[in-house]
Length: 347
Picture 1 (spheres, rainbow, N blue to C red):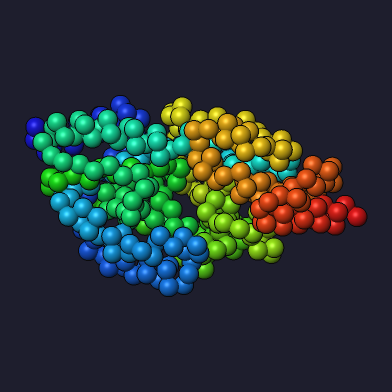
Picture 2: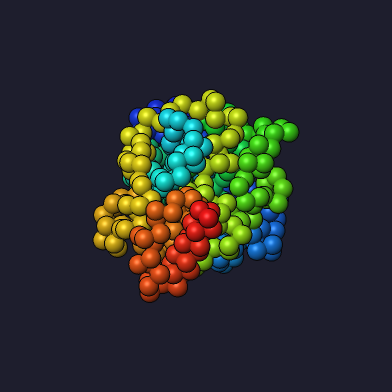
């Protein structure tokens, strides 16, 4: 099969498997700014407790260090565009607000399964070796996707596409055969900075500069332990992630609602009262197959307590009290804070 025919057929196979687009790029980064940006991120401690980012900077800045035989990279996008504006959920103070990407099945498993099917086809067509990656290895995903022409890294540091806004996952197939690369995408953010202005915690130090230590997505998902008190009230009812900077992006007007049923909201609106009374078994069963399960019951309860503390509903105090005897110190701290906030905001 000619390389030209391969690319045309690859696009068909990608669409058949549910991906919205696919691009081809080389594994080499000529732009040294990519590595310098990562080094600045680490130097300023914007990565917070995500210490694994420190350990493999070289691997992240060069796919060839990750796999010396790689000659080309196939990059895929998988849309998960919501059917409505997720910012409206912020007004439901008694409901747990879960980030759009985590409302359905765990994307790692969904995307990887599809990539493996396509990978089998690629190997047959090109007689090559491959490696598949979905957010599980030190891969500079967004720069590679931009090089492949699928979008650009916006001022909120997420990838943005003219065709899909910023509601999509990325998947990668590395192969040891050289293919003609697609043209890279350029930055189309212009003077817009809506994503920076809307951030509830002012987590951006400027365009393209995110301080994870203040980012609600980091605080509710990656952070272990108690959240600083001055940030807790800004979390609102968000118990897993934050969509504000994504949802406000003007390019979303071109995004189509995702056709992938795996990402359709499988979690019904979860009342905070119900969430707070989950046992460990309840938690595992309710969030089985989703990204939220990896949070664990204690960090989950911590987040729910912060949301309840922000609800201004004094009725919750009685169901919070048992958690003041938790064996986890940051859960006890969150319970005490929530009760204090509810009493303070109700006279």
